[in-house]
Amino acid sequence: GSSRLDFDDIDADGDLVGLGGSLAVTDLFHVFASYGHGNVDVDGPGDVDVDQIAAGAGINYPISDTVDLVGQAAWVRAEVGPFEENGVGLF
Image (cartoon, rainbow, N blue to C red; front, side, top):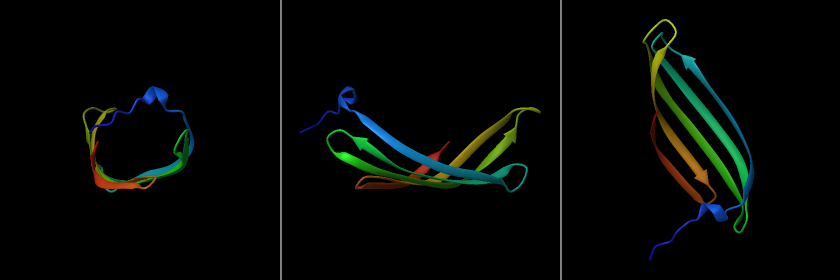
């Protein structure tokens, strides 16, 4: 069978914090990382822990003196309660 999730019926409140940064390696190339952690209180299931880690690299190509075109690729790991996933993100 299938199930349907109706977001109008979800009441959630949470506290989340995050930390991230980047470092220019050359004029065109940078590396970055971020970490986020928190707890969300959802009516019904109760408290759900949330963790997210991302690390990657990017290229910033100047289009003009004030605008850069930025592309990034990252490895991402996310844990929400008992569920966890790893993957690649393109930004």
